Length: 129
Length: 164
Image 1 (cartoon, chains in turn yellow, green):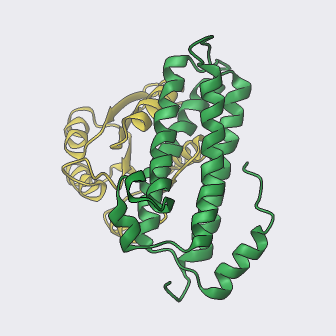
Image 2: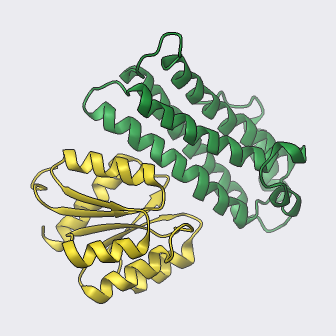
């Protein structure tokens, strides 16, 4: 991915396999990646690393806080944070909540790599990095 | 993709005409569990395909874990015997129309079965190897067809005005 060298990407998803492979794929594209499987850890990493882009799974039943609350806490730290919400087509109310909290984009699961690339590129263009 | 059922159009027509409905809770379960599994399989295959590498046996084994989970979800929703599924209460509380059971079993069941066969063939303990790029492409095509089926059926059943 052009110009991605050194950009930080934080991936938050309670499915470790998804975190693992998104990290591997985007490391190869030049990103510095961080991956966590719960919202509390995500907020900690955000605080320390200030990633340019954060990818947050909305529905995380194994996390102490869900994706919407994770988004809220990250936006409390930086109200201009670029957060992409990963959601399911069945979670309309959570999409609405995320939108009102300032999420910059949405990605529907199950997604393909091309969809993820496109969404990240759009976020980069929107935020200018 | 799984071969279309010979009466596929007729089944979708019946779903529409009879207002056959799938509870949103069921779709939530399917999209959460099977959706995550499909995304993980897709990412794993894409990671290796992008660099033209075969998928090593250890990584390919993860695909089997994901397909097992999808199968578990489908069994939960479609298997009649209580002993054969993990959450019989879900099935009992929200029964699925026989047409829907047939479609889940046929489309998702067959695609998942083929993915399993491709992986098991590659990592056969008697002659262990990697999943070739060609095989990984076939897995991706099955993942896409499962995803397309889920979305088509969801749209066909989601707004239906009548419960069973």
